[in-house]
Amino acid sequence: MLSKEKIQNYLANRFATPLRILNVRELGLESKSKPEEEHEIKGFGYGKPYLVEFETGEGELKEVVISSMKGNGFGHDHLSDRAQILIWQHHAFNKLPKHVNSLDVGYFTKDGRMESASDAEEYFIVCDKVEGEEYVKDLDRLKAGGELRKEDKERVSALASYLADIHVVKKDDARLYVRRMRELVGHSECIFGLTDSYPPGSEFITSEELADIEKKSIDWRWKLKERAKRLCMVHGDFHPWNVMFREGTDFTVLDRSRGEWGEAADDVSSMTINYLFFGLLKTEGNEIDRGFKKLYDLFFDVYLEKTGDYELLEVIQPFYAFRGLVVASPVWYPGISLDTRMKLFNFIRNVLETDEFDYKGVNKYFER
Image 1: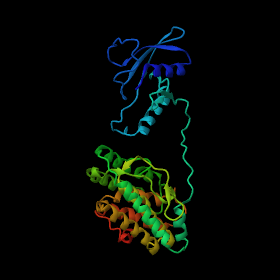
Image 2: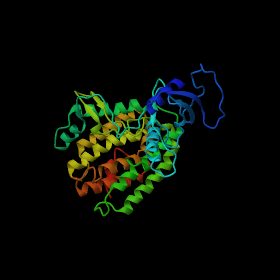
Image 3: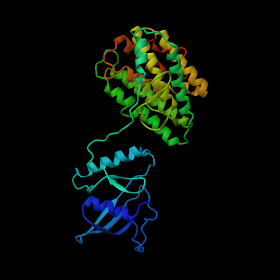
Image 4: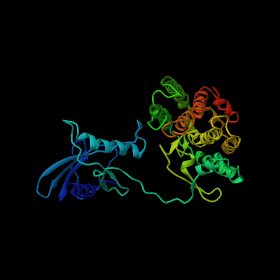
């Protein structure tokens, strides 16, 4: 619970002077007198602006407004959304003529204290050190001609089972599912951001063809909006560089992205596109290598058996388009052959045209 004492401590630190709180009330409401000994601000709620009147040690009277945000949709669902907006406002308000000044930006701690974040230049995160090797090393070994081992299959089964376990956790929030489908298409890290990153005049894709991929992706967004019951716990960027294996099937995942909840197809496509991609790299743009195709089929077989989620095959198409745009990108993968890029764009176009994805017959999607 926010208290006058905590507001007073924060403001005294912010203005570097002793002070006394005279009144705290919701902005727009008439001031109500309260007994001096009442310390809790009854009815305090996030998203409401509060007028704080105080007197400094030098007898100067001041007024400030303390505001926060509600997580009420419109891109405000996550704590990080609201932090992003408030931090931006603090830096932007004071650069516009005649705009009200921002004095500080900060956060509420779990025990109700108020802490300043206004001196921040950039942000960082500190995590545990994880032992092991990136899963991509397994794929590199196979691409270089290494033998398909029992452990390779066991690891694929472990990864598919892991996704099956986290995806079983559902969330009833249609608005959030719609947001995630909107982000799949329009987020700067997703389809629109990727199409914008392709240089003009590419040998393997034209601007008109990229625009067509965007249009088909929008059509898919409208189809998927009706599938909100599929909202589940996700990783969000489940690819071979974000999985660290130790002995056998013991692994840790890294760098969860773009939210706690989403569409299971996002995680499945993120990992499985790499079996196809490395399978093409091994054959230099010809049919998917048989060893990688076995791993691809095994991943789907295990996942579908554990989840029974065959509806996945009706929704995975735009997610494969997103991941296809990643692996076909000259920004992320500058050294791959023209034939491989052409095959990947065949895949993107073809999956966007299919109503039910046929993972067993995936090779056909790479043909023009």
